[in-house]
Image (cartoon, rainbow, N blue to C red; front, side, top):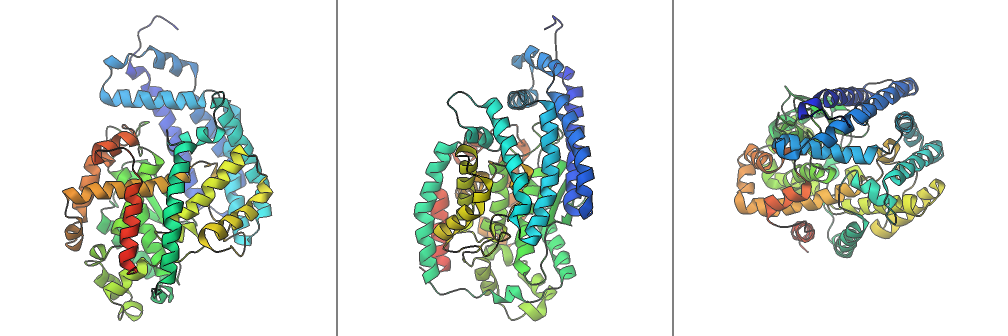
Length: 499
């Protein structure tokens, strides 16, 4: 290394170039999932591959490493320290991966996502299986570059989404959920069934769109800094805190789907829009982790969005929008229907109680794919067996089963446990929030902004400048504790079903 004294400003051109490529890739990905024509993916994949390689080398190169190693943390601001810590983690994770392999993988994932969509539509896993097999090979290879001797490949992948939550802790977490949720589910299934048939009448999609825009705005989504579009699989993405984009999917015969999807993605979006300007468009300009991000979307969707207090000021407008379908449905009936428990096949449509059982299936299969070398062609059968074991149902086809989610086609193996952790984070945060805010009273008065302000103060504003465990402890006063989640589920559904 040269003797030239380095400063944080020397990193800025590299960081800005990396962020520009990141933004370009996200824009193309957004387009691919919303408006791009079906036959575009093969040609777009090449451009995605080139851009990803350029993004990779914009940070993972000798010049950046020299500057990074020459910086003295004591001379840096808090923001600069946070960015440097994130950069060191990214560098350590990525340095061993050859740039050409990263490009090849990005092209593969772009193609695989399109093939997944086709396979799902045709209910034919065999179309997709060869692509998934290659994706698994790449992910194992990449994890192998970073794995320490005697370590776990799957733990390396988990670290990419939720650092320090490894198999050992996740196994304990899921074991506890299994012990508590499955018996509770069986009790619920023996109780009187809740009528939600009014959700499955015909609902004009244009009117649904109009209401969902209103709903997002009511939650606090700033349309001057964001948009809503449609996609097969609802998601949220952002270029920075002044351009945050969410999608939903509308069904003419299922009113609750798009509503709950909008609330869920709106929770993600409020997090992104709430990040401080000083952090946005930097390496710490997104959520603290996948689970912390998911805690916000699940908090809004489930804790708030399925409560009577949330709907008290909103339900009259929904009735006015669909008077024929909802005019004779009371607020109480509507809210009970939103909380109906029924084991079903689709994770994104799952009720609050069975949701983590869906995640458990995916978690266990990911471990088998990565650690036990289970062949890809065995996955549909294993998937169906686990659905029967945990939820008491067996998928009728690949669309209901193994082809349900887009994540594996994108290479996001290790992501799914974050959804379950997010639910548990949300319950722990809610337990503390209720001591400090009159949550139900605020919702009944339509003052959801005060709840968002609380979350912005404690979570949103910091982006990824703080670790999720650090944030959770600062807010709640204790380490991660899944007991609050189990307690929340028991109390809620024992009341809903009068058990």
